[in-house]
Image 1 (cartoon, rainbow, N blue to C red):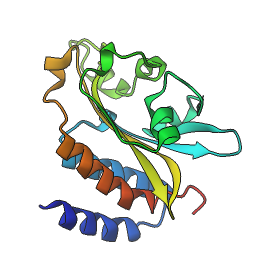
Image 2 (image 1 turned 30 degrees about the vertical axis):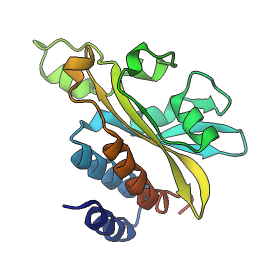
Image 3 (image 1 turned 30 degrees about the horizontal axis):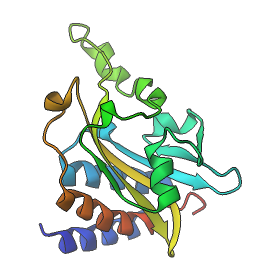
Length: 181
C-alpha cells in the first residue's frame, strides 16, 4: 500500500472511532504494521501546556509513570516537541537519554506465561520521534523504536524514507488524538 493510500485509510478508520482509548489503540496498531515493530515499540506522548510537560498516553501502562518536563535535556520526545523537528537515531542506546521509562516492564503477561524465557528488558536501540500536531499546534510526539540487546538484535536501521512516512502518518494521527473528546 502506498503512503498516501495508507494515510487516507487511516484517516477514515480514525474518524470512525468513538472513544479516545480506541483511537490510541488503533493508531498504535497501524504504526506497528506500517513499520513492522512490536506493540511495546510505539509510544504517544501529549503536551500538557498547564505544567509545561509531556506524558505518555500510549502504551497505557506508561500513562501513570509521571510527566517529563518539556525542558528536559534527557528526553528525545521533549526535544522533538521543543524544536518541532523529527528525529532519527539508529544508535540511540549510546546517546544520553532518560532511560527510566525503559525500565518499566510492559510485557508482564508474557513473562508469567513462559517462565523458561528470560524476561530481561530490551533497551531501545533505534528510534524515530516525530511531532504530533492538531490544527497547526504541536500537541505531542509519536515515537517508533526497535528494541534489542544490541543494534543487530533490534533489527534493521530506520531510514529517512521511514522518518518521512512517520511524519506524514503522524499528521493524520495528530488530528484525532484529543483526550478531551
